[in-house]
Image (cartoon, rainbow, N blue to C red; front, side, top):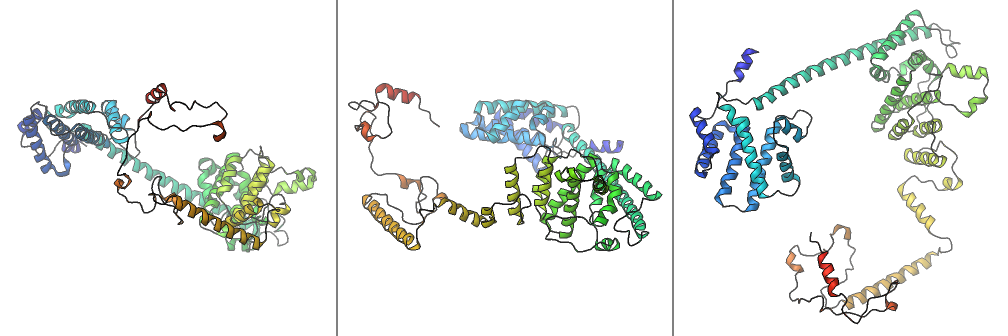
Length: 573
């Protein structure tokens, strides 16, 4: 570490010796333009030797001093000087604060405050880049303050010895240390994730092996109706999985949703005696009973509200990803697990009249028994964001089980829109006879239905009548266009009979118009004052809709006081 710090103090400089350095510093901050020009020439030579390694402070100082030299020469106008000062000040703020920025962008005011740069300098830079340009006086004042800051924070620190750029290089060292620490933290976190993934996978594979062994020990006539009690080894595995879920439940759920676990393979279904074929067209996915009982010991042990919330969230996210990359088998089982979890929380009306035996048999195959408070709003949004063949069914379950249900009309419309979007039958209430006769599945059919509803019955005509009316309208329109063209004869205006998309032309421009703005100028014109304008008489009978009394018509339209009021309220933009 000592060797590294000693090497950091060595710098290759572009000036001959310290005497040249002191001379350039003295000339830069002098009031003589000739001396300042000489100093700028020496800095140009330094930049040629430095190439791209010129210190930021030296380059910023040269830019600002050059602005002062050109300002005092009187060769540039005020606007040119404002732009020149603005460029130098913007470059100063950007270059000085650039090395303080980390991987995430931080406000310039915060970075400038750490470097003791006045806040109004940052505001001045903001005005140059985003707002109206400041005045020349503010530019000169900002240049003076920044040069004083550079002299105090950089140039004065070099007088004691070798080149010292701690205010620049220190941030580089801190950034390198922060990047190194961040990479180490990311590597450690990635290793922990890999270890957790392997541990979760091993535990779930052990659970599956024990379940397969227990299933193979059953007689064939009891495999579908009865599942054996867990072995002693199974109790130990379930305890290990529960402990793992307390530490990393997200990793456990991610592994559970992989193929071979909650989404079975064909070999697993055959070993459990389940049918490998599934009805992909069915909108109500349902898990095989044996496969559900295969995972019930694990899910009943993990049926905490937090785990159920996270499981539903992960299932819907996976279903949304499958909508982009279709996989019918995964979509079927993911949807079936979502349906199974929501059904465990339902409190349907028909359940109120079942016997104790029926209730006991139903509760036996449920993941959890007691009703929990689900995040219905999030579930509703997640379901709508993951459209698939089973979305109407899942949406119906969510709408029926919400603690604060939506209005009945809103639910029906939402289910109808869902069935239209997924091209499936509506799983909600029966549609009306009109809806059955005129289903709306495309935008074209929606337009047709809208036009059909707007057309009254008593105004429908035969085909010949409609053709006759269309020809009459065409003839009447041609006569009107000819009359307008006759009225505009001899005028620079003319009627456009072409079909033109006027939305593609800005206001005041017509097709074929020249880009030269002088084409809009007239050759002859005359000026007229307000009082010289002719006044037309107006009476109440030729001004429809006017109820207030009209102004007298025997004098000018505007009085002298009215004109003064108009002038006083006139604003120029």
